[in-house]
Length: 460
Ligand code: UDP
Ligand code: UDP
Image 1: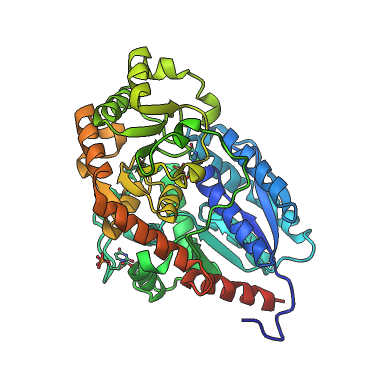
Image 2: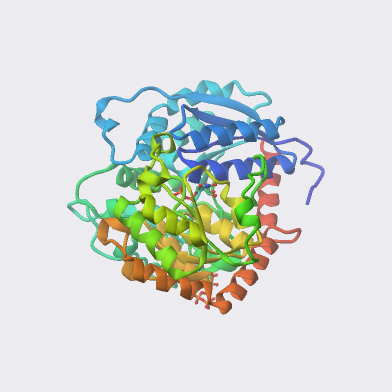
């Protein structure tokens, strides 16, 4: 791979967005780059929204002392955004409005930077800064390539009253129906998510490249459409570098209950780091899990932000349900290291909201998925679960409990079907092998990353 002109050690700065769904893939990418002898500076917006983010970051930096941390101290925001519908989107905006602080930070780094890797949510605010410094800036898109087609196209689909009329159609690809798009994008009024899609999506064309945590065998057609100009004519290279392998830097959790369960017998139930259901839906879910007769490990989340999630399990589930749960499952309210759970031999299925990192961890570990998308990109991702044969998706369940409360009987039946589906179990194992091949020695993602690092080595 190397030639005589590439002796320079590249120095790359990474800037993640708010929430574990953005931080985790950035940390994995940082570790991967460090393992390829790239000098990495990690720019951490401070403060974070959740405790999970600050703990994960500090554990990571302890485990990788060769990675330099710089803090981006966020400015307080005016009232106009303070009432945002989502504390994580509010934080995206906070980081966007603090972006000007990056210029002195980036130019003070030594050795000088070869490139910057920026979360997609800051494309429109950070690109002008890196441009003025003459610094190549790569956008890291932390969802699927299919979702990227919507991200870069959305601004071209807007009608006169700022709404969209049609599904997204890309020649040669299955459509993204309006009903699968994040609901705030379909509103007439402006909201933070819509603004991010419009402003960042437009500006992506000016970046040096777009990195995606996906790989050829699951999204080959989508990647080809993006790179052949079928989605947007002037898009820079879209580079698949995934699935980013988990890196173990947290101390191992001791879940004796899981160790005591039979191989492949347990359904893991989690809706990610920032999705809370209504109490009513939580209780129907608990009832359904019990009625399914399957073993289950359930991460119960009652509030979006972990530091506010302080009610005890007995209050959230009620004593009677909690007692029933204990007969064939384990419910927890504390943070579990999900990657460690999914790699445990007792886990045989995953009831997931289809956050992209959760899916990438499921396919990495060859675990069947029962998709229950709740918001954002999750229906687009759930479609991929079905398409590649990783799992099933009951579309009548809708967008979580905002549309309808799914009843315990339905949940029980669907859970027992997936846990009894041996074909899916085999398919998931096959997907795991392909995922690992993509990042193995001669894998497609490994080659793309090596080529990218070579480009940085030559940047003067
Ligand atoms: N996660 C975890 N423990 C939890 C909940 C989430 O370790 O109890 C991790 C999960 O493994 C994933 C990330 O947090 O890496 C969540 O990202 P994802 O894209 O799946 O969903 P989001 O939380 O952004 O909705
Ligand atoms: N594919 C893609 N994006 C899509 C649909 C398909 O990248 O929206 C790719 C993916 O790599 C898949 C291949 O195209 O393996 C064929 O997809 P199809 O849905 O036809 O499924 P298959 O033939 O694998 O059953």
